[in-house]
Image (tube, rainbow, N blue to C red; front, side, top):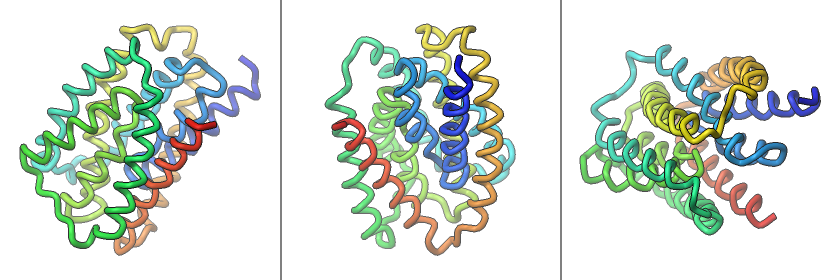
Length: 244
């Protein structure tokens, strides 16, 4: 592999990991926007999932006492099931139209929550968890990008940004492990990629530590607005990248 290519991969992973640990999600939104430019889509997804799995595992352990399992479980169970099914089937299904619709949905939902977030309180019930869990599972399975949907459920369901960060990282870690297992099973990542994985892990840890510092400095009063704005930006990026 060319050194310039390796440095590009490391820069993308570092940027994605920084956003992930600062806002609770974002790694795959960034990596899957850039890595497919230089490698096969399946390889890019596999590499992205390895990076985000290690990152979410680290943060989950670090903030394990703040994880709200009662909030997460009604959402986690349907998401994990749908993620596994859709990710396994997505190897044979074209998802161009779904990808564009995903971007449109993110923009619309972010605008709605940005405007009305102060009036919205999502209760972690089996009903709400099942509905949003199915949507999140589809997004995760097709695009390895379930973070925005998870944020829209978990942010208003947790009481502060520390609980939110701990809970969403634990949630994402479980689903990332599901996708990682399927990626290896489907041959989306093999032993030839180990040098890239090693370099990516170095970049991932650097980005994660930087992101945690940024997370601590974001005022709680505007944290929710920052999350919803980033979901919208991610949606715009998905639409633009798809059209281009």
